[in-house]
Length: 494
Ligand SMILES: C[S@@+](CC[C@H](N)C(=O)[O-])C[C@H]1O[C@@H](n2cnc3c(N)ncnc32)[C@H](O)[C@@H]1O
Image 1 (cartoon, rainbow, N blue to C red):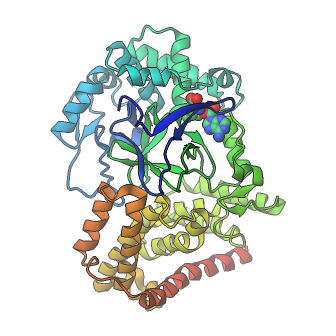
Image 2: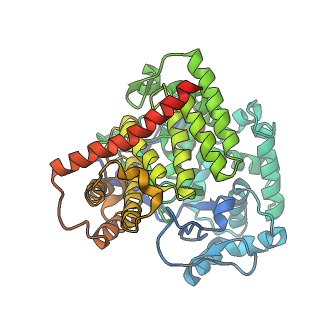
């Protein structure tokens, strides 16, 4: 994409710099911008092993949550680092980028440079080879870098290095490995600009895969109540509306997790992006439409303990991790499930249960988010986060249907609830197919995958009557509640 679509324009603001605006009214749930391939993108180091470096097809080892095609990834025989799902992807990647970096990666094998160094290096190498499209490169250079703010920032990472020291090290590495002759200060500013302007590259189910930079979508300023969201489909970035956007309005995305209270969001925005958020939610002390909780020392102490347990748990084998996460949740059980860090710990516990194939437990955590967390954090029923979580729920329920018919003992606890799993699956499928059209687009591969999955399982034929769904939904609520009671009891005992 060499330029912006005609219905988008840029406008400068003395505080926020350049932003992206719509000249026409935009309805909710439509595509606003499409970037077939961002200017540069890299995979996070662990994903170099399980994701195609060209089209971003993700094939995780456990198969859960990844792309379902029966493809295999093959490593580049030159560096043994990047992997591809087919010859065509390998050739495309080679021509655009990999021929410049393959020998560098090979020399370092089995070590891999951090993703930020690799993305800066990609820009330097392609600039040296004069293969960067000029309009995009110039648009990139116009973006804010905050290099002076980075230089004076006292923020440190877990190794105690200031952000500026880290930028110096990353620039030095990118410069020397790429053989760039650019002045040191140019590469440092380039690195700072990358840190400010990259998006997290994700799967269409919002699992993070890496980093990417498109100078057009980088123009989007932040709001804690954003009117758009970025959705990836493979390596294609699309910007979609989350609300009706009046003509001549600014488009916004959220740079941070909007489920955190306003003080947490503001402090993150100040330290990572160097601005004070004055959006309506921050000004009114609101988090996703709900007033921020009042300051509470007891909560702060319990939260500190729970977060420390969560961090310690992440280093342990899955069974011990699960026990510790349950303990962390039990400390927090007298606070609402939607109050952070509850949602974050529930999600980690859900992933742990999936990893250990504890399907009934995974279902109870997923239902907790479905009933008690997501509707409060994302009031839009087709918000991408809610749609993606419904997709996970649908697949989990399908798994449970298989286990029920096989008489598998791992889901015995669920038998107490007398649930008609077929109706539940059809209900989730209905909600999901309506939502995916708006969140991802009716022509998106995600919507197509959902449709094929549902139809393949015979769910697409009839609509289930509302009354039948309500009966089953009441039972599902009990599954989510039952676990909440258990956690509360454990919390009180402590
Ligand atoms: C990804 S860039 C967005 C494009 C940027 N406005 C520019 O002119 O290059 C992020 C930077 O934009 C500015 N910014 C974004 N959202 C803002 C907001 N809501 N209020 C003030 N500044 C904002 C901050 O300087 C931030 O570091």
